[in-house]
Image 1 (cartoon, rainbow, N blue to C red):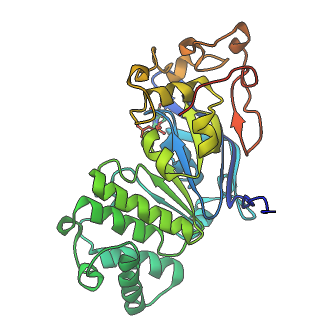
Image 2 (image 1 turned 30 degrees about the vertical axis):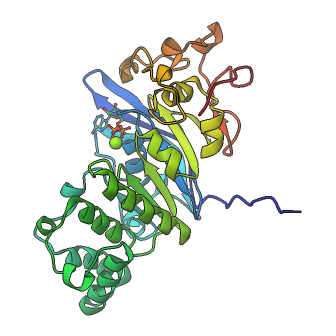
Image 3 (image 1 turned 180 degrees about the horizontal axis):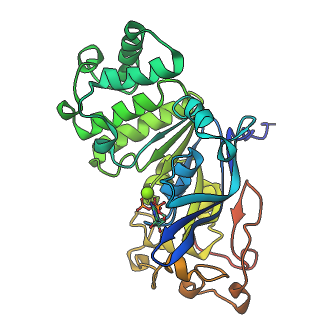
Length: 332
Ligand SMILES: Nc1ncnc2c1ncn2[C@@H]1O[C@H](COP(=O)(O)OP(=O)(O)OP(=O)(O)O)[C@@H](O)[C@H]1O
Ligand SMILES: [Mg+2]
């Protein structure tokens, strides 16, 4: 008898995150009731169209929201015994880059052009681990090697402008993992890169997960997530609409939005006559309905969809749809 595969406990558990933003229409909620469980050794995909709240979610967890425009209104983010959302800046500074790291959406703007890559990586090691200059440089070379940069003992002295986009992304990842954090949040790490370079970065993220890291892979590219993640959370208009093991979500989506997205993914397993975009548009944050946010675009809506819909089903396989039990949606 083969034992049931054990799902590891989450290292980072976000629950009920709500973030508001100051806009021309006053304060509006841009992230609402977001829960995410990141587990060691697994890549957790976070999907959702532009503006759905993926980046704001990552920034909120690290206490990096642009204040005062953005503000956490509710929720917890448990990392070990700490709630990151309740910590002050001083405590967060000791955790960021050390226990949780983030690779940001624009690699070019995340590196200081005046610093060699060795110095950039070295700063993190010197700040968090109090390494000497010499030890930090030696470790930076090892890290460049770890992320697949050829000739690391030469490249350690390179400036950002001397490196390609794919190499810069690897440098950012090396910086992020320098202190061996338990969690790596990677926000669109491959969007600006061509396909072969992208494949290399994804292989690197996989090898980090294989080393035991919990990786969050944020992207609006569902096809990429289908191929590269273990767990998947889908966001729509600032809310999680469903989450679960990636194969479950893709083969048996529980939310009509996910089913609509899957129908729009160009892939060998999807027939061309289903390559239809979902009609309609995401409601503006200040015009968000109190009920299901997807209702006005949903072919399955009912009267009860006008009421607020909770996320049900628990962390293993959650969905936010009143019809989750009676609808059978087509996956891929
Ligand atoms: N500094 C800010 N001030 C006000 N609103 C903001 C700010 N930053 C983000 N928002 C709003 O928060 C919402 C979520 O934005 P976010 O950047 O998290 O989306 P995203 O899912 O990461 O999109 P993309 O795929 O384009 O990166 C959007 O409506 C956005 O306009
Ligand atoms: Mg984003």
